[in-house]
Image (cartoon, rainbow, N blue to C red):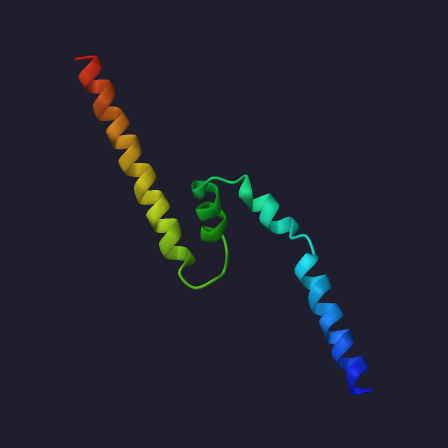
Amino acid sequence: MRKRGMLLCALTLVLVACAKDDTADARAGLTQREKDSILAGSQIPGAKAVKKTLTTADSAAARAARLDSAQQNP
């Protein structure tokens, strides 16, 4: 009986190890920005800080773009 339980446990571990993880494939195609955006929309602790950081980065990028275009068209 004990051997049967150990064999069943080993078989289960082998099957789990060989299983395909579809979520990893789906996430592989996302950019870091997209991953951060998904995280920012979640309910986990710290998500609001990620959202604030993304907003601040967007604001800084927009300001830099305005400054660049102002220098090119005086």
